[in-house]
Image 1: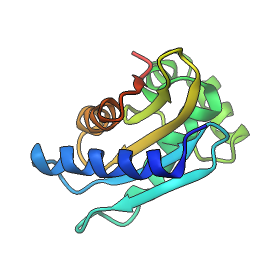
Image 2 (image 1 turned 90 degrees about the vertical axis):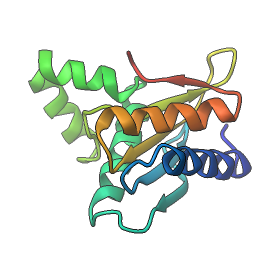
Image 3 (image 1 turned 45 degrees about the vertical axis):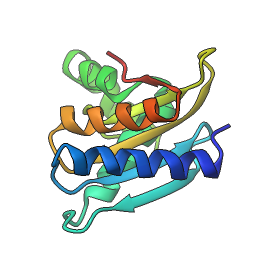
Image 4 (image 1 turned 30 degrees about the vertical axis):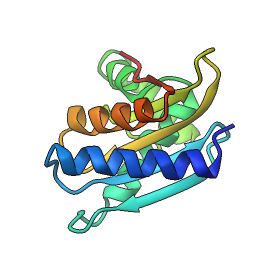
Length: 142
Protein backbone atom coordinates (compact mmCIF):
# COMPACT_ATOMS: atom_id res chain seq x y z
CA UNK A 1 0.00 0.00 0.00
CA UNK A 2 1.21 3.48 -0.83
CA UNK A 3 1.81 5.39 2.39
CA UNK A 4 0.99 9.04 2.98
CA UNK A 5 4.72 9.76 3.41
CA UNK A 6 5.45 8.14 0.04
CA UNK A 7 2.61 10.06 -1.61
CA UNK A 8 3.90 13.35 -0.22
CA UNK A 9 7.44 12.59 -1.41
CA UNK A 10 6.09 11.62 -4.83
CA UNK A 11 4.12 14.85 -5.00
CA UNK A 12 7.19 16.94 -4.11
CA UNK A 13 9.45 15.11 -6.58
CA UNK A 14 6.91 15.43 -9.37
CA UNK A 15 6.45 19.15 -8.83
CA UNK A 16 10.23 19.66 -8.61
CA UNK A 17 10.56 17.95 -12.01
CA UNK A 18 7.85 20.21 -13.45
CA UNK A 19 9.64 23.32 -12.23
CA UNK A 20 13.02 22.08 -13.49
CA UNK A 21 11.63 21.31 -16.95
CA UNK A 22 9.58 24.54 -17.03
CA UNK A 23 6.31 22.71 -17.67
CA UNK A 24 2.98 24.51 -17.68
CA UNK A 25 1.27 24.52 -14.25
CA UNK A 26 0.24 21.01 -13.25
CA UNK A 27 -2.44 19.40 -11.15
CA UNK A 28 -1.28 16.15 -9.53
CA UNK A 29 -3.53 13.50 -7.99
CA UNK A 30 -2.11 10.47 -6.18
CA UNK A 31 -4.23 7.44 -5.29
CA UNK A 32 -3.47 4.27 -3.38
CA UNK A 33 -4.19 0.84 -4.86
CA UNK A 34 -7.81 0.99 -3.64
CA UNK A 35 -8.35 4.24 -5.51
CA UNK A 36 -8.44 6.36 -2.34
CA UNK A 37 -6.91 9.80 -2.75
CA UNK A 38 -3.63 10.14 -0.82
CA UNK A 39 -2.36 13.51 -2.06
CA UNK A 40 -3.30 16.32 -4.40
CA UNK A 41 -1.77 19.62 -5.44
CA UNK A 42 -2.38 22.20 -8.13
CA UNK A 43 0.42 24.59 -9.00
CA UNK A 44 -0.34 28.28 -9.13
CA UNK A 45 -1.87 29.13 -12.49
CA UNK A 46 -3.37 25.69 -13.11
CA UNK A 47 -6.59 25.98 -15.08
CA UNK A 48 -9.91 25.27 -13.38
CA UNK A 49 -10.65 21.63 -14.23
CA UNK A 50 -7.11 20.22 -14.39
CA UNK A 51 -7.57 18.61 -10.97
CA UNK A 52 -10.54 16.57 -12.14
CA UNK A 53 -8.66 15.53 -15.27
CA UNK A 54 -5.62 14.46 -13.21
CA UNK A 55 -7.87 12.47 -10.89
CA UNK A 56 -9.61 10.86 -13.88
CA UNK A 57 -6.28 9.76 -15.34
CA UNK A 58 -5.19 8.18 -12.04
CA UNK A 59 -8.60 6.69 -11.29
CA UNK A 60 -8.89 5.14 -14.75
CA UNK A 61 -5.45 3.55 -14.39
CA UNK A 62 -6.32 2.00 -11.01
CA UNK A 63 -9.82 0.97 -12.12
CA UNK A 64 -8.60 -0.87 -15.22
CA UNK A 65 -5.20 -1.92 -13.85
CA UNK A 66 -3.25 -0.37 -16.71
CA UNK A 67 -1.56 2.95 -17.37
CA UNK A 68 -3.59 5.55 -19.20
CA UNK A 69 -1.35 5.32 -22.28
CA UNK A 70 -2.80 1.82 -22.79
CA UNK A 71 -6.29 3.14 -22.09
CA UNK A 72 -5.70 5.78 -24.77
CA UNK A 73 -4.77 3.03 -27.23
CA UNK A 74 -7.92 1.12 -26.25
CA UNK A 75 -10.00 4.25 -26.83
CA UNK A 76 -8.65 4.47 -30.36
CA UNK A 77 -9.17 0.76 -31.08
CA UNK A 78 -12.29 0.03 -29.00
CA UNK A 79 -14.07 3.30 -28.25
CA UNK A 80 -17.29 1.62 -27.12
CA UNK A 81 -15.41 -0.37 -24.48
CA UNK A 82 -13.74 2.74 -23.06
CA UNK A 83 -17.04 4.61 -23.13
CA UNK A 84 -18.69 1.75 -21.22
CA UNK A 85 -15.77 1.51 -18.76
CA UNK A 86 -15.98 5.26 -18.14
CA UNK A 87 -19.65 4.86 -17.32
CA UNK A 88 -18.96 1.82 -15.11
CA UNK A 89 -16.44 3.76 -12.99
CA UNK A 90 -18.77 6.70 -12.52
CA UNK A 91 -17.34 8.91 -15.24
CA UNK A 92 -13.90 9.31 -13.67
CA UNK A 93 -11.76 7.89 -16.47
CA UNK A 94 -9.68 10.11 -18.74
CA UNK A 95 -8.18 8.02 -21.57
CA UNK A 96 -5.00 9.96 -22.36
CA UNK A 97 -1.39 9.59 -21.16
CA UNK A 98 -0.58 11.03 -17.76
CA UNK A 99 -2.13 8.34 -15.54
CA UNK A 100 0.68 6.08 -14.36
CA UNK A 101 0.51 3.04 -12.10
CA UNK A 102 2.97 2.92 -9.21
CA UNK A 103 4.50 -0.52 -8.63
CA UNK A 104 7.11 -1.87 -6.27
CA UNK A 105 10.18 -3.78 -7.52
CA UNK A 106 8.23 -7.06 -7.43
CA UNK A 107 5.45 -5.59 -9.59
CA UNK A 108 2.84 -5.22 -6.84
CA UNK A 109 0.43 -2.34 -7.40
CA UNK A 110 0.85 0.44 -4.83
CA UNK A 111 -1.29 3.12 -6.46
CA UNK A 112 -1.40 5.59 -9.32
CA UNK A 113 -0.56 9.17 -10.12
CA UNK A 114 -2.50 11.32 -12.55
CA UNK A 115 -1.21 14.60 -13.92
CA UNK A 116 -2.79 17.25 -16.11
CA UNK A 117 -1.65 20.69 -17.22
CA UNK A 118 0.95 20.33 -19.94
CA UNK A 119 0.94 18.01 -22.95
CA UNK A 120 -0.06 14.44 -22.12
CA UNK A 121 3.48 13.26 -22.85
CA UNK A 122 4.94 15.86 -20.47
CA UNK A 123 2.35 14.99 -17.83
CA UNK A 124 3.41 11.36 -18.10
CA UNK A 125 7.12 12.27 -17.99
CA UNK A 126 6.58 14.21 -14.77
CA UNK A 127 4.74 11.24 -13.26
CA UNK A 128 7.47 8.77 -14.18
CA UNK A 129 10.18 11.10 -12.85
CA UNK A 130 8.40 11.41 -9.53
CA UNK A 131 7.94 7.66 -9.24
CA UNK A 132 11.60 7.03 -10.12
CA UNK A 133 12.66 9.50 -7.40
CA UNK A 134 10.96 7.17 -4.89
CA UNK A 135 12.82 4.16 -6.26
CA UNK A 136 9.56 2.62 -7.45
CA UNK A 137 8.47 1.41 -10.88
CA UNK A 138 6.30 3.48 -13.24
CA UNK A 139 3.82 1.56 -15.41
CA UNK A 140 2.54 3.88 -18.14
CA UNK A 141 0.80 1.19 -20.13
CA UNK A 142 3.21 1.63 -23.04
